[in-house]
Length: 399
Ligand SMILES: *Cc1c(COP(=O)(O)O)cnc(C)c1O
Image (cartoon, rainbow, N blue to C red):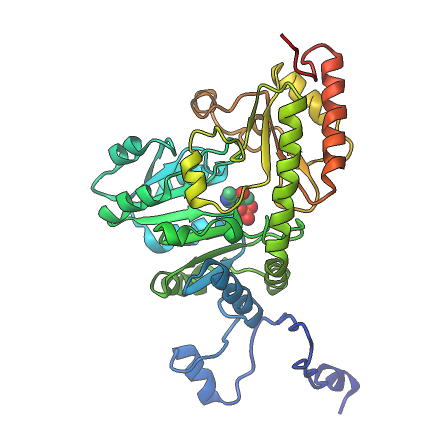
């Protein structure tokens, strides 16, 4: 045989004794016979067909996440936004109405306002904490409720059980974005969510290496999403699914350290700094403390500081940090900081920013896995540099 032919047809390695499963980096699959190809395509026999909609590594990731969320099934897709896209494509049609919690990820709101509106789908935003607003926003054509809890960056908390009751009374699907808490600290399905979704490049990946999304729920709700994937094609790369499936193995250990670090940084800030306010669910005086106690078994590692002096001081603080990265992502090993109103929330109008309490003095810190003393030291130095220009004082003044 020709050497090029020979090379192409070298037998596939048998990886069955590898301690870690190998990645199925394959677009397509071999069929033993023409009959078998027909059976798999028609669905009369199980097995892989094409990696746009079936792949063993992707399937492995889905099973692991479903186990964490105690869900019957899961489907992973190319990004968190693709998860929103495929849910809407599958479960909404022209003329339908959706209720969005205010303060959800900005791009989710944008997706509905800018794009789904082109297909005759309308959306209303309501305050996440105000159940009367939820009730009043319901119309006869309301088909879906979308919630994030807690919201980012202001850490508002939704009453999942009460909203789920409103949704089921209306026969609407209740979707909960669980990215911030991960399945380790919150199980939305147990509070009545129909589908729970994650931007999996955040805490599930855990080191900011990849982008992906995953949705978990009942087999009955996940199966139509899988059927849609065959046509919409918003599939995840098997490589990303592999990274994320092993991210899941260390998720619990990481979340516990993220939380411990956040608690220590928060306690230091409370004692030693003079920032106007610190938004976190760790605050015992949080207005939804009873819901936090009920719904969460831990806290998102996010501290949003309100720095007096508006954008000038917020930017000065950000630029004075040396350990903490200026990066809008969340959920990685490195601590990251961002200024929401000039980055992630730039597209909100002034009126919306005011309505949601998004002021120019806010900086959001996602606490990473470094030693917390080093994180505190960096924040302390940066606050001192800002206060040395007399805008804020570091130590609380004794009156
Ligand atoms: C990042 C994020 C998204 C979007 O996910 P991508 O994977 O970036 O598309 C959705 N929801 C929340 C809460 C997020 O943090």
